[in-house]
Image (cartoon, rainbow, N blue to C red):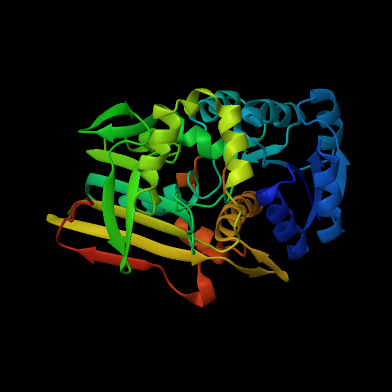
Length: 376
């Protein structure tokens, strides 16, 4: 039985624990300082070992990690670096879902000389989107453009934002405010969030996309010097971006994050009826021809283990579980920093957890053509 500790019993953490325990191969200790969250989790996952401690207390956490193989961090981004430090000290593998660029850089620095593997950014974006994009990009002789687009959207939008809360509110606000990495004309640049608005259609539906922070993971470092343009943008229904700019900039709520979080969580309902959209577009030269290849998929909410799970819960939780599974199977590096693009796409999708990205054996929409279509 594989012994792992999961820190964070929230919306994503519950599904991570459920997937791992249901596999029959994992004994999961769930750590959280919130007694109410743990009590609720005990009702739905009685097989989980629950531990109420403050994960920020290194001494308490070290006791929990003493006989574990891995630490899975499903907490807000500000705990990423301290939890990674605890994992390195305990010599256990580390996994997280952070979209925060600064936290990922701190974890990368910790990985130098570590006796364990540190695998941050294991969710949907960053995470799976990098795996899919790199799989397309590595088949080109010369890369021109790599465009990555991801959205977690309500199936039935009913408010002015055309949005419902589906994951971490702290993470959402963070990616709407922080600078965004990109490669433009072969040069690494920082771009402002919420800018470079574009519109596109997929399967007959209209969407907008705009810059948000963190979605590229480590791809800027990996592809720098090899690609002309690389960017990541979040997908929303048309009109969402303008409302967010009003709230964050015109009303200056971006300077009052605690208040903005309170407003969002008291006014915007959570929904389990959602869809995750993944779209990667790569162009460049293959055998002397200008080619374009696209990976596109929609993943919907579904019932797993008798419980309704949102699409963002399914995609995020299954991605980090697949990364954990592959590493403990010996299919990923066992020490140091592990990038998402180090995970082969075929190995991910063939994994028992990664298969949640393939519905009923359906293959993703992939297209190869000789033309280049700019997304506008």
